[in-house]
Image 1 (cartoon, one colour):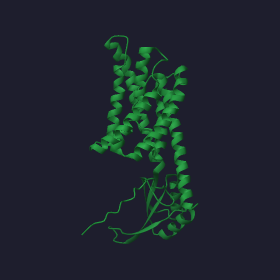
Image 2 (cartoon, rainbow, N blue to C red):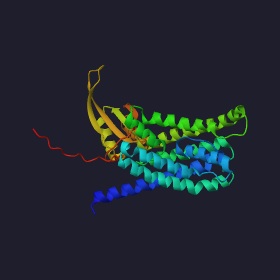
Image 3 (cartoon, rainbow, N blue to C red):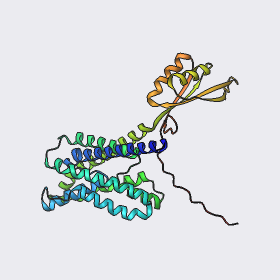
Image 4 (cartoon, one colour):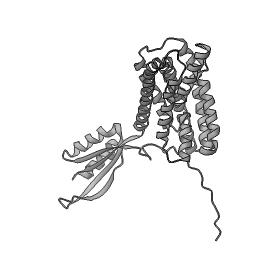
Length: 321
């Protein structure tokens, strides 16, 4: 077994393990902190909650259609529709993730719906649920996974039009949350609005928290720091960075336009947590060094992240002259 094959196998095992953990965290955040308060969030879990509440109103509490069942059926229908549009690879990867997610939600929702909420304060509960779901989604997306649902709709729309995936997800999620106004309610229209509007607000809050945390997890995982260093002691600094921080240094030629003097510019990339170390190394060599530091969302290559993109083999075509 070659080293390259072993490395690829270990990477796949790591990815699938983290995706599995992310799916479990997402399911826990939804069923433990959001569902018990009947809050409608975006995505297919929100659609499943709508169906659950509507059927419980019709058949009695405890007799409604579970969220996991609605979510799984909707995902399968969307994937069948999307098969020709987004491709076989996307569909196969998504159907596995959605099956596992529906299984986790199905295992947890009955318990948490049958017992009092873990956190009685609704605002705190939905905020914590949004953090858990967002963290889980960030872990899933970072390792090339998918939760299905509105992702499938967004993927289809982006293939057929110029509307971005992010904008499509926002529109669909807003429609799902606002649909809670149509749920069966015993009372006047004014009473319905007074009862449902706060729930809708909580739905928007949890959806926003999820999106924010998801972006934060994704960007934090990929975030690196780029330094430009200007110093007369550039050789000593470059050697110290190589030796102490074990980071590469690129030397660029520059010219100060005011002084018209030629200068050497050091360019260094490192992990964000290593930035303080780089600063200390520079200042220990030259207190007067001029330094710029910027955040970089994604550095790929040796010593940093590996690009997790599967490249399709190109078909060779014979061109007849």
